[in-house]
Length: 330
Image (tube, rainbow, N blue to C red):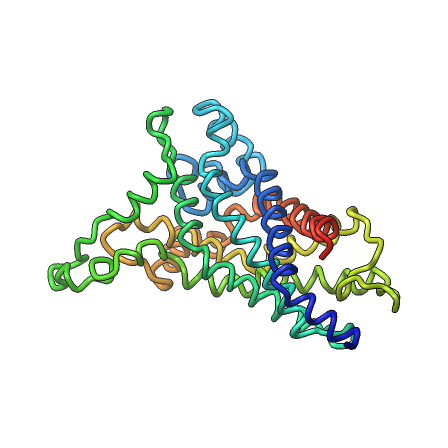
């Protein structure tokens, strides 16, 4: 059997796919844990939580918001919703990186076929695939992080947040619309998909740009594997973790810049069950609300915090992903 056929069989084997997914899942959990406190502050800013709106927009405001959360609830307050984050991020990151490994080989089986368009396409498709399978967990995580009531007895749990979403009011928004005809009344499971469409669209520039930048930098700055090497496509046999950190950091910054307005719209739609539990907030209404409140700057509220969070998170996730693949032999 030819070397090409052996590599194809290996990369598409169940053994390879499982190990690739484990490496990606662990990478996602480690990266999210590193930036969990900043992640919660950013969600409060993006969703326009009235208790924290005055802090939004600056790094100093983010630290003031974090200090307030710490004074109210201690360290656990900074990690509120993190249990849901970990439950979501392991399958999310596992599917994303596993899908990218497969799409990379399908679209770019040789180094000569590596193009920026194919890198972007592979990244975007892998991100969209992971969102499709894990979105309800993302919504539950956001709802838990959005809650700012004081006291340990009022701290939301994963199950309580899930139950609250499922039992949100389904009253019609007007007398002319019978409750039986509402989307939520007919299909209550759709309550777990508030903001799903904007998440899918926003994932295209985010994951696409992230993998495009990361793949391009590795291809440009790192030497190709030797002809006798059995390493995977585009991977040097001696890659420094520092290089993976640097490439991941820049990729994260570019991806965050390209996709941030979608993220702000998504957060507003995700907490729509708290602000407008009787109906589904659409793109148009959400965008108009953001623009009427703060103009075009409203679509970039918390962006500086986003950089502070996404840059190290993406850097760590790419580094741990590559480290995990080396450890697991993929």
